[in-house]
Length: 634
View 1: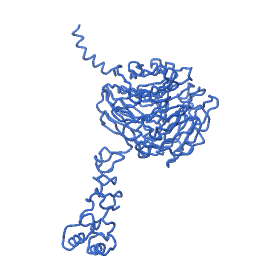
View 2: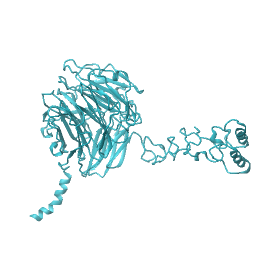
View 3: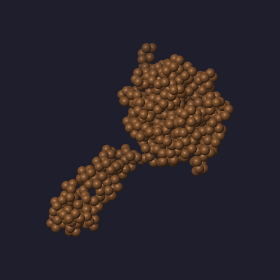
View 4: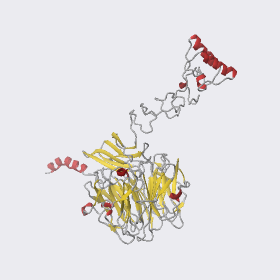
């Protein structure tokens, strides 16, 4: 019998290996400056503030009296962090609730909008290298209402990020407030939209989220109605731009997303079953005393959602809690999305591991992401902060509690493969790629698996993470990456290496050198992108690689100083007149007279020109071989 069992051992090991990740994967608490730092922390976002390629951490605080500065932690690499107190991002005294990040002017730098309830809001423009300014853009930053949450999205498909802002009704659910919608004018300003849905009728508003729920190619708007206590169902506004070719919205009251009066608070979208459709998890607040189960909406077809009610799904839909935030992320890199939720009164946070069959297991204790006793929790955001290939988790603790006990949980990893994708739009799409749908195909456990993410500027509890992380299990290559952009164009990449960070742009690669929108030689392979003269034309296609010539016009025929298109004795006379008699300079610029390419004009150039015209001497040199900056001939 023992011999028979030993024969079965290899088969048993194979079955175990294909069954999924071991539940023992754990996290450890980072002990850097992030630990316990910050009073009454609320929102949290992972964004590259200074353009160094590493994601930094921005944490909002809601200390209403006196106001406190938000927290800026700069990623130094190798798991090291430094708190920044640079003005204005790290010094402004605000009581901030919502934050949302996106490159609203498409200059390649991430910008931010902050909601400061009871005070004026803040727009931060990124000037580069980690410096920010506060532009005065009218109504957008002059509102003094209870603006609570906001979200960037390009609702009119013009390639520019617009903004929706939720104003909370702090009096109660009887009066309602108006949504604020701001259209990006493309010149650094915003115009408030004052008529029609979704801004015309007062409702309870908690949190807005742009989402193309019907997959028709334009951004629709979902608005939760919870807090303080909802008396109406959540709101869904369908964008009619594609159908009518006119920008507009109409309220959808028949969707499965709008059938529950549940005090819905913060939505988090994620395709947890890998069917290509974005599902929605909605936390339900219920006030500080009324605990309620959260809601999982499963997308059954484009535009159709069904509330998941099967108890076998797991306690993520059955356990009652005063919930706040939720965030999807594949923490074990097995190829499906897991879920972390936060809770306000007892900090009963939960990590739910996706079993791959539509059910989830609570692994909070075994993963060692236990909450801090006695500290309320709000925001949670996944990010591969140390860039080791697995998702780490930041969680804020401290709201309604003395002090703060913020935590960065570092993922111990498990050896599975991964891919990180950042989208960058150039051709009719916003630079942040917000609204892009990213699909990745790989063979995991011997089966082809498509995973889907949607780039969003705001999810969970006041959180932005634009980098899209994909766990790949035992896959050794990514078969395909497919990005559907807000403009409707589709970008595809094939046979992509695993275990890397990749930026996907909305351009093709006709010359096959793996450089796309920023290719300085788009028609000729130039994988090094060398550009010796700095004119944004790569050396392999620059008609003068050593002399700056951004227009790529013919610079000069050396020796043809009178621009007659040929070199004759008339050019000798012209050059003699210039050198010895201060006559007109060579045309189109001085470089055409530098016959011997010495870098200056002298009698030696006249002698060289005479020898060439009358004695068959050496031809005038090629000005394009001169060192950069010798002659400037536009």
